[in-house]
Length: 86
Image (cartoon, rainbow, N blue to C red; front, top):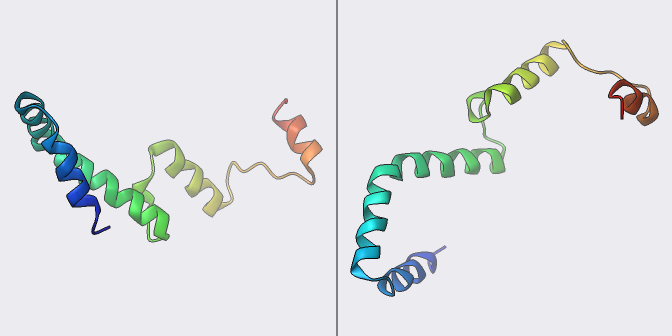
């Protein structure tokens, strides 16, 4: 992790001043979103996530599983495929 910043700075130094300014403006505009997404990915990867870390469809699926609702229960894979019409 310690090598990432020096490598990034080296890459940035190869950009033209115009490219550096464009990138800086992008970071200023999107930094909060980038950091929030990275934190969300970290929580999911470490298993310390919350329901809010997932999109709405996934949240609904998780709630249904936790409540035992709208779940497909199959005895075997063949039955599952039949239910899914595969």
